[in-house]
Image (cartoon, rainbow, N blue to C red; front, top):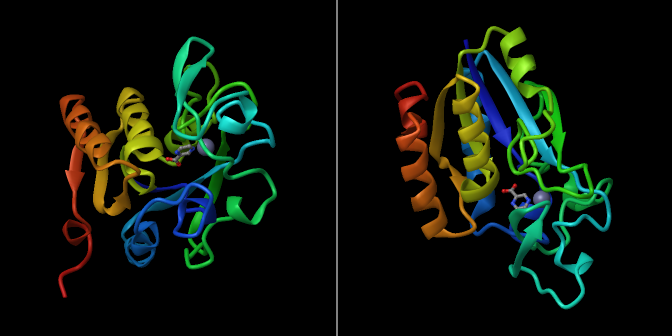
Length: 205
Ligand code: VGL
Ligand code: ZN
């Protein structure tokens, strides 16, 4: 059984948002068109408490995109984004949510970031996504959404670690950094994952 994981298609990651990914809105029609090709559609939602430690504003003297360490892990410091209950944290209005069976929220622990839909960045706590997918008999996971070089990449890596056949739908994602996505694709391939295009999945027309 195949699942589509729709990663963080939220207003703050779209043009005009607090942590906008260039052209991020361009993937929404594709993600909508892809959904009927899957046995299960699940979404993730970045969902930070105000004052989250991944926000530059939580660190005196730091600017967005500076780096620091959190719990011994390298951490990019972001503009405030996807704060719980704000419009920026909502799933994009253009995203068809009818077939989304569950939404996994992440980044809720104020002390640690969580790029992956499966685990926090320290791999200490699970969101329950692995068990949920296994319970639905899922063996193949296709990842789409934002951003390609962060949450999509980390989710794909954890899916591989958890033993799912793992695919990133390349034209259904957009990156914060093009170089970052190039490196991410190489890493995913090295780990046994695959890059596919939406036309590999959509019926011929
Ligand atoms: C993301 C940076 C910070 C993402 C989330 O969804 O890729 N990136 N929080
Ligand atoms: Zn975040």
